[in-house]
Each structure stands twice: as C-alpha cells, then as structure tokens.
Length: 312
Image (cartoon, one colour):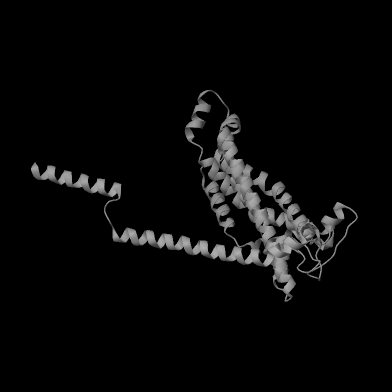
C-alpha cells in the first residue's frame, strides 16, 4: 500500500511539474527553438521582400500619385500606368462574384444539407477537392478550349474579358465549395435538431439557423477566394490577356469589355521582363498597388467575419 501510495504521489508530482512547465526537456526546447527560428526566417524574408518593393516602387507612387493609378499602358515608363489593369481586375472580380459565389455556396449547401451520403456524393466531394489542387494554367487551357469559343461572337476572337472572367470563376469555384462546406459542417448539429424539433422544414432550418451561423466562415472563405482570383496571372495570359504595352479606347462600356484587356497581375508580369530601369521601378509600384488591394480585401473579410460573429 505504501509503495502504491508513493508511486501515486510521484505520478502526481510528475504531472504537476509538466503542467506547470518546471521540468526542463531538451527535446521540447530544441523543437520550440526550431519553430521560433522558422518563424523568424519567414518574417525576415517577408520583410526583405516588402522593403525591396517599397524602396523601389515608393518613389514612383510618391512622385506620380494618382496619375500612375489612372494612366494607361505605354511604352514609355515615365507615362505608363496601371489604370487599365485596375479596371480589368475589378471587372474580372465582378465576373467571379457572379459566377463562382452563388454556384459554389449553392453546391456546398446541397452537398452538406440535402444530399445523402452515397457513393456518388462522396465521388463529387473527392472530385471537388482534387479540382482545387489543379494548377491554374490547366484552367487557362480549359478557358481557351471552351470559354474563348463561347465568347468569340462578343469580339476580339473570343480573347476578351468575358472569357477571362469565366475562366477565373471556374478556377476558384472548387475553393468556394470547399470553404463554404467546411463552414456549414462546423455548425453544431444540435442547432438543426432544435429547429426540427419545433416543426421547422429543412429549408427553414437552413435559411434561418444554419446559414446565419455559418455566415462568418462563408464570407471569410469567399472573400479570400476573390483575393486569389484578383492575383492570378497564368490563366489570363492563356485566354488572351495582353502581355505588352497598348493603348485601347472604346466608345462605350461594351466595346471596352469586348476588346483587348490586361489585368494588374499581367501588367506586373510584363513589366518585370522589360530591360528598362524605369519599368523596374514601375513593376515595384504596381506590386505595391496589388498588395494594397489584397490587404484591403483581407480587411473586408475580417470585418465581415467579426460583424456576423457579434450578430449571431
């Protein structure tokens, strides 16, 4: 009995020391040090990249200001700007919102709330997750084979902003489905049971209980998905985004959407290959504009998530 009691006291002391962190463990200390070193290295690389971009592009933005944000593309780095790229990127994002968001959220609701757990449903879920990992350039090839042909009657031999928007919409569609499904899956099942218990229909349960509870996760996932679409380059180059300097004017909005276009990431890709020193500074300035846009989108996502979390 004394031995058993002594062993129990020793075990409690070991547990107490481990919980209070008073026992030094070499392996744990080394692992913690490696994690800290990894964080510091990643932060140092990020700080170096941001510092280089700001030092190179900051003077361009400070000197030209709004002119750099509104000027069209040109062969002269002193007059070239990103106005056309910002406009095209915003329009492409609108296409993604129209195409990917409703379809993606609707598909997630059906898969999580209505579809039965069958072999076909599991196959669909597996396919969606696999599509989310497909390289972006593959979606560009899909856009050339399908969307460019569809958009050909609209102008510029189908290589217009309509084909680019549809391609980006299909690219981010699997990600919207996955993020929305995860947000719906995180809703406690007891909420559904309580709603069914008072006689609510399945649609009433989804509309009034599940979706409001899952809204912060859905909004966060979809807005961050829009940020990814905003920064994509490879699919746009494949489906016809202009990789060069051009001046394009149109009489109306339809002609502008049907003609040549060049998104902001495409402009960065093009200017980065130019040998002129002026375009190197313009490239860094355009990167700053893109980073500010992405940070703004992320800030909107955080704001909406916090707002809906406080509401519900």
